[in-house]
Length: 393
Ligand SMILES: Cc1cc2nc3c(=O)[nH]c(=O)nc-3n(C[C@H](O)[C@H](O)[C@H](O)COP(=O)(O)OP(=O)(O)OC[C@H]3O[C@@H](n4cnc5c(N)ncnc54)[C@H](O)[C@@H]3O)c2cc1C
Image (cartoon, rainbow, N blue to C red; front, side, top):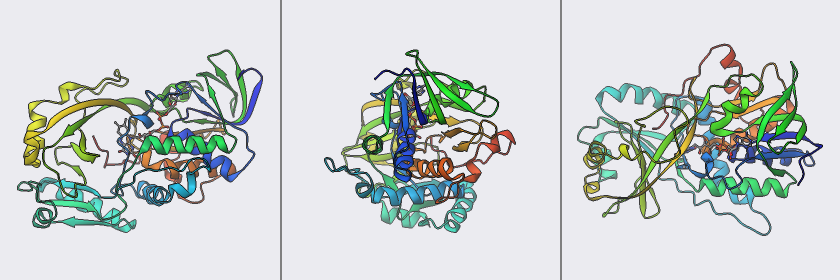
């Protein structure tokens, strides 16, 4: 398709899960709206949406994130109804064995504070003493654990790339166009963006623009002179095999910071990275797999003393360095420029709710179904961070 002399009501930069979900909601809420997704990598080889651990939890410390997760789990449970096409039904393989946060004595007070916030927001979570943990998970060593926090429902994992593809296909079935091109510039006045410039040489006039460029959202934002503190932060995921089955294994978060969960007949695991510069090459950092890490895993789950590392992959968190939370909504001055960025490693589970909130904001001037105003861009301008303390890895 030639990109010359084209226009759209809405141009969305990036068609990962955020761009695709926004496009789907926009055209579902307003059939006939002309929405174009511009995507430079239609194989999604580097997109976070392809490289995600695709898990969902209610255990956040910001109520707005819990609201997005509550919407997210309900949406995932009904995803087939929302997103199947006449020719293609979808299967997301949602499982809900929970997240289990483990605390050592010095972390108990923080876990209890988070628990109060979660209960107030309606999350189905429970604090468990070591003996209860032993009973529930006999393969888990809790000798040095003082307390655990378990999601009793609404937490687990699913096929994130399948969710992404389902949003994309259904959006395109609703008339959304996807253009294989790279946005290299934005044309703007003091109050609005008027067009996007494409690497192929074309220009696309637009009524509204969405920055859905994931880890590269900071680069796209700079095209309007706007600083958005979102950077590509590399994370490595290791695929392990364990000789013994770990019955009912939840997504486990160790007090030392690593996480682990089942993935089919394997386990996947990650930890806080050793190297933290933004934009590191998308290759696994094998130095993270060292004796100390192995020892820590085997301490917590003795069966893992005999584990095997099968392979590893790396992906970018779209890290909001300001407060580790999403930015959803319009720019205060360039009023037709919208953001859906900075989910800092927990966006897959929030895509359905965030896409709806943004679509409502764009069509009706505010989010209506889920209250997300506190995630707006204003907090960056006013230097009011909304810190999410439960960022994993
Ligand atoms: C290792 C890892 C584990 C994760 N685990 C979880 C988890 O357990 N649970 C969870 O909820 N989330 C998790 N996440 C986070 C989640 O995957 C992301 O929040 C989500 O996928 C972000 O989607 P996105 O659409 O914003 O970004 P992306 O999927 O990266 O999509 C952005 C797209 O924009 C395109 N693009 C960028 N710039 C341009 C341009 N100038 N022109 C055209 N196209 C452009 C890119 O090619 C890309 O396809 C994890 C992420 C990683 C990397």
